[in-house]
Amino acid sequence: MSMERRNAAARAARASGIIVLMALTCTDARPEPARAGARAEDAAAPRTLVAEVSDSKALGYVGNRKFLIDSRGTMYCAVRTRGPRFTGICLLRSTKHWPEADGFDLAWVEDRPGVEVSSAPQRAASIALGGDGSIHLVWYGGTALAPAHQIRYARFAAGGAPRLLEESEPFPVAGFERVYLGPLTGDELWQEHPCIASTPDGRVQLVWEARDPSRLNAQGGPQPGIAAAVRDTAGNWSASGPLAAPPYLQVDAHFPSQSRPTLAAGPGGALHVICYGSVGGVQQILRGVLRDGTFSGWSVVAPSPGDQRHVSAACEASGRVHIAWREGPASGAGAGPIAVYYASLDPEGRVAGPVRVSPAGENASTPSVVANGTSVWVAWVAWTPGELNSEGRRDNGYPADNAAVEGRLEIRSARSGTSSFGPVTQLEAGPVSYPTWASRTDQARAPEALIWTRIEQGSKYRLMLTPVAGR
Image (cartoon, rainbow, N blue to C red; front, side, top):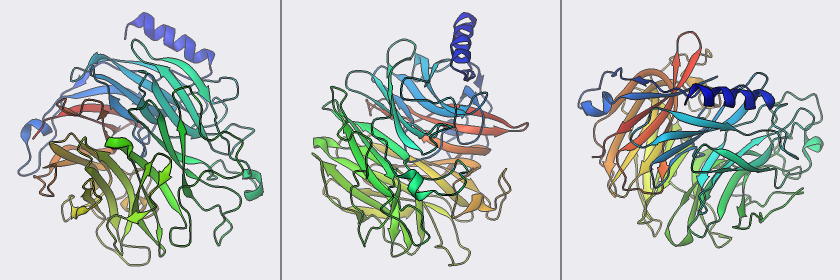
């Protein structure tokens, strides 16, 4: 980015009360040591320094896709980072086409009529490329005077520097003040963790972790369930607020709660919804299919006595769905390995796996998965059992690992349709957090792109990008 453009961006950001996130253009070519049997070219691939951010959750969490590459090779990434007062949402756009990457333009969400973002922190965003070429963002947040987290939406022009076209809060859910009666901390859960995907018909599909005042747990807190809405090509949403209750997919005695959904759009209009939810009191990975507004119901992907969370999913053109998640001992079950597992489902829903992809002798979490029809890759964060992270949490706070999940960056790949993974490649010794593969409109385009947050001494956090060769 030229100095003139940076200064213009800075003036615009100051006008909206948010500081500029500096998009950087240098390449960090420091190779990290590879593990035994790893591909040297992956471990030694150049790292591009994308931007400096304020904390390790700039790319959190793993379920909601926030990094994509369009058919021309232009990269877009949604980042949450802190401004002068609160945390905001920024859209980054590469100035060159992948795999070239040495500079990024940026645009912030900003105060618009009916959507105030400058008086309270905004939370993690999800990104999708629309059929009209627009970039769609959803995130969750509130305001100083209305602290209930609500789903928020923005649309940016693609092609050239990103430009904010539209911003709204399409369907606020009422009743927050009936549930939270005491002094507020700002961390009360309401409408959380949205994820979006675009479909060939030009619509934008949205799922999120929803709550309402009528569904409370034994402790009096609101019970989460996955809700869904659709934005049509005219910009109309299937739900419009304020809502008394969100449009839940399925909440019943067998599946009373679900959290942190992700979406994988498949052929023929199939929309795979994957999340984790309580089954018999244990968190399990759940999957259902949404087609033409009808939901199949939940099924457990890989039944286990272990605690399963932090799920990521991808669907290839054949209809095969690839799923990776974190699994460890259930609460009260004692110590045990915390590992990354993988399974796939064929177009008929038959499950292959699960297989453990993280090695024995280490703990692992926050996986991200991508597939291109030929191969599937899984990236994750690994650490030595018992290790403390930068917040002083042992084993990254497992099982309530909602804060920083930090460690080494590792990847592994397999041929699509098999569960035979190759050796582990250590891309960085760490600490890093929240690796995220790019989703792309052209799945056959190589190489794959991986972005993550590097945590450095002096409380510096940097988004790093690298190509990963095909296998």
